[in-house]
Image (cartoon, rainbow, N blue to C red):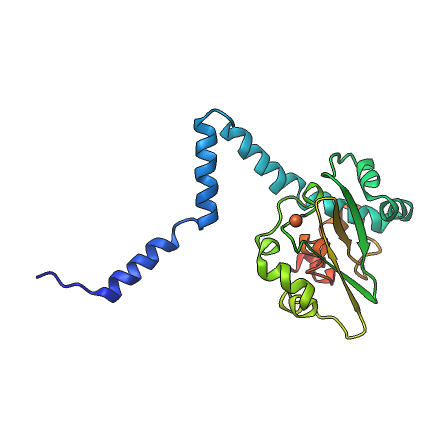
Length: 216
Ligand code: FE
């Protein structure tokens, strides 16, 4: 009789499953295959859109906007007053539907962006939203316990720093303008843009000095 080692079989089962895409990823694949089969979409078009949002738009456009605001006070003023038209000056059109508001971090204020209802995100400047942004845990805790969430992202805030949480909608999205780190006076716009992390423009990163010298 063949030996049946249930623990071994269970381990093998888990191992095989660990190589499968997640449930949402499988569902998306099925939908994509159906739409392709019916001739409603073209796979190459999907791939190129994903590439554009992952590699070209996000988060490079946002980082460019931030670095420009750091180096050009007049641009920053226009950005704070009317972000979509200021961003359009940089040649980036289509700031999604609805309005985009830029909120500025200072020594005394830290801004955190969330969409409590679903996952509204300024994808026209930040590209594809990170998975954690869409999770129920982030969406609820960012409002209930923003300091706890920030702590988990490694953002240490002094008690006297005010945390402002901005709840996005399809009509109103937010982009955080992080603080320019000290010691960057001699850096130009292109190098400054490399210090601007995606998370800093959502508010789950704050001190960008750690990226100077490509340390992180
Ligand atoms: Fe949403």
